[in-house]
Amino acid sequence: MSDPATSLRTEGLTKSFGGVLAVDRATVELREGKINGLIGPNGSGKTTFFNLITGMIKPDAGRVLYRDRDITRHSPHRIAHAGIGRTFQLCRIFPRLTVMENMLVAVRRTRLRELLAGLRDKGEVERARHWLRRMGIEHLEEAEARDLSYGQQKLLELAAALMAEPELVLLDEPAGGVNPALIDRIVSLVRDLNAEGRTFLVVEHNMDMVMGMCDHVVVFDRGAPIAEGPPAVVREDPRVLEAYLGV
Ligand SMILES: Nc1ncnc2c1ncn2[C@@H]1O[C@H](COP(=O)(O)OP(=O)(O)OP(=O)(O)O)[C@@H](O)[C@H]1O
Ligand SMILES: [Mg+2]
Image (cartoon, rainbow, N blue to C red; front, top):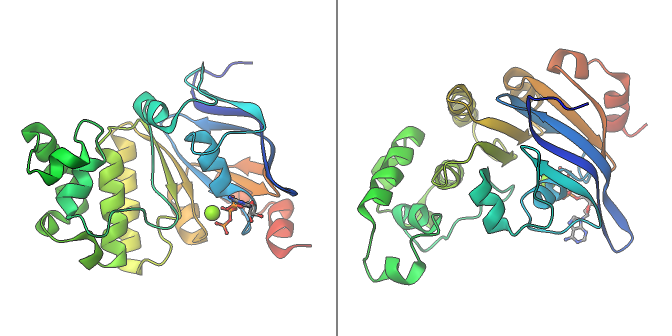
């Protein structure tokens, strides 16, 4: 059965690290054009699942299909180019580069050496300003990234991910360590970006955020989905409570 509204699909995706089976035959289908949530206890394989989709680690078995094209084992660069962007659980930005420099290195066309020599593509700079404005951090353009608050660094990371114009955006714990006011802002940004046609997959432990923001939620336990559906259904599912309570 082929659902036309599928942007990303994994089939039997599997990865172990030594004796630890991190992702275990995970078959998952995302809803295209929707905000998909991925929840599950600590260590249930969510970040590894992201790393497998984005090509940062190679699966032991299984496939990743994006818009019906097999992208398993493609390089991270090629996968980004295909339209999949991501942020990291622990912010990954260059602390000693400025905000603008971080935005520009996120785009392959601007190489670090050119950047440091002061060579900047005007079009890229304009696009970077556009995303910084959308995130509300345009005034920090010339600040070094390490001087930003943690929440501002998260916004910068999201802005940088958007430089490649992804159609599918994976967010790994966007609310982790972020204050409530900023969480609200991130939620409304994700909603706006989704309304513009981007599909999201959001890993998040903040249940209020997940349940309030997502259209469809997939629950992982021990490396594979154990339940999925609309937030209101998933939250009442006894298997989900069991997974969290470790019964
Ligand atoms: N590079 C690695 N080397 C060895 N073990 C790893 C590696 N990456 C992940 N693991 C293990 O794989 C399992 C899944 O980890 P993963 O980080 O994917 O979980 P998670 O669901 O993202 O957890 P959290 O909610 O705490 O972020 C864990 O047991 C973890 O210790
Ligand atoms: Mg994780």
